[in-house]
Image 1 (cartoon, rainbow over the protein chains, first blue to last red):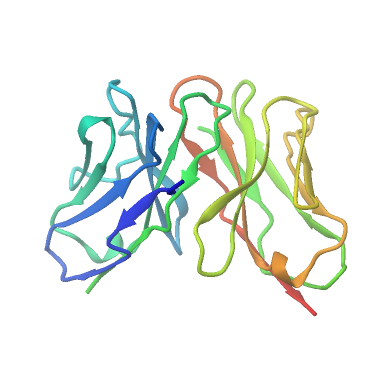
Image 2 (image 1 turned 180 degrees about the vertical axis):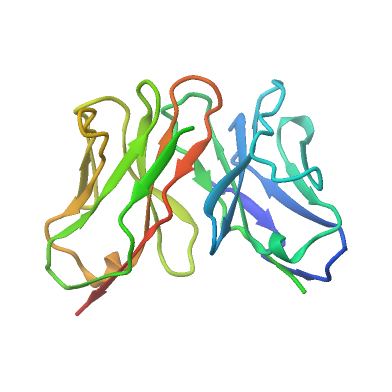
Length: 114
Length: 113
């Protein structure tokens, strides 16, 4: 079956612009995660959605970052007023519910802020 | 908070050499432990996992044992191949609460023929 799909695969934008990154999880996976991979910080957790529960937003680095998940499926990560330090690869993962369930990752969106 | 420390790379080995990548963690309770691998140009993939003390995870010739007493989860392989060249990430998922992964910084492995 299809894996986690992310779009776009690459995004180049100017500082100060808003960007939207999309994630389409594996069908049937109730949990969805966003992570950020950057040279300086490694892999960092951003936000976690589980079913209809309130999301865990504890990893979002500032109020310029937000995410939503519509209908328990597709998720959009939005970064407002982008800064150069936002340049990174943004990874989405999904899983079945449960702490022992493996997370399946998409190929990521490489975001470059000029 | 929870954290993972893994050996700094890069690591360069000859084919058929023995591999160890050290990983230690700090967490309360009994986290689940994972090794993920990222091959060149590909996304992160789960390599193996262990969910309780003394469990051994294994896959593709790689092994790691969950050692509670030393808070470690070292990755080993007896004979590496060129195709094992990749970046390896140790990760934990804390007990209870959010099911987020906490990653180490990654270790780049290059295997030469």
